[in-house]
Length: 508
Image 1 (cartoon, rainbow, N blue to C red):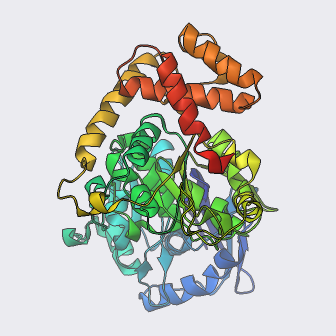
Image 2 (tube, rainbow, N blue to C red; image 1 turned 180 degrees about the horizontal axis):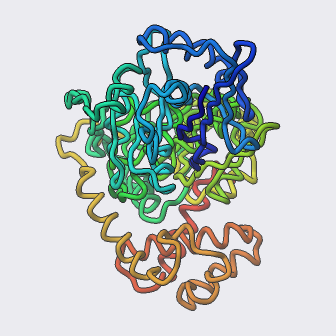
């Protein structure tokens, strides 16, 4: 008979809560009772843990075993509690030193033979452990380098339950092969130099990146819309340390760090297919609520090609994260909030046949069919788009030219310089990008010149823009002004921003 406590972490979105895994072994009919709101995967741990303990050479108590996951009111999900349950069971039989599990957090899923499998959500779990005063954390060897990204806490990587008990008994730490570490992006970087011509769309990309503005490309197939969008991360400034940890934590919870280098400072680029569902876009699930494409694109780019072909409601589900910068998913078991501050880039054909160009060549679609096709992009969503650009097919001269356009490095340097100007301007505020300026300050503290405001107010009175459009044009004008090193947006900056906002005649 005995009692022992091991500690673990339960994740609620990116927030981790420290959990006490209490094990009591008492006289009575042999059996195991698991308490504390476990989900189905966690309830099945009793069989996995029993097989793992026996196959690791440890003894299983032939008595009444009660396991309580405290606090009991907090829902627990997943198989990450296998290791702490197993260690607490062994400790309750007095088979581990008395203080072996003190100030240590355990994470890991056990296989039936006692091996530890790779788990997701290790990074935010270790952050939560450090925040709650833990000195050490035991993780599967496959997650060692991910957990080691966090300073201020000792990380112990083990491959099996046998290795974990050996460490707790002797203090011997088994070395991890450093060749398992992956700190670089797996995908080669794309360069803006690859795009022929397209001077206006290029400039739109630069302005959008400077201020974090949302962007819409419309043009015939093969004009370079996707190429332009895919190269946006290459002209964005590297992620800060805090942003890097946040992005890595989200991808860790989603279980797709294999698609992204560990602690990569390259902004994420997420491109869901146009047949994706609303839960896949914003996140969802029953017991374990996974982040969707909007959260995976946090601090990066969410690109949706063939946007009018998306199912009804999928694009409109983006309206809330575009405004708030976060996604809240409510289920009967819990309500989870994930961050979702991203640059939205949409691409679409101009008409059902896709051959429409600014000069109308080769297109047989009627004006009504074109309007009906573009109306699949709802008005409220379009009103949240800052820049609309028609992408014309490149000319034969541009395609045959041996002179390459500006590379991503040159454009990125200008973007970093312009963002530095904005950061200095907003040093006393909580935001850093022009697209985040609150509406209340746009007419006073961050207004354009008198001529620029007069022009914009005139367009508002003519009902050519909405109140939201008024604010978005002014924010874009600040990005243009920063690019040109203007202290305040001039009338020319405001007109240029308005033209980018309105796009060509096809949008009207």
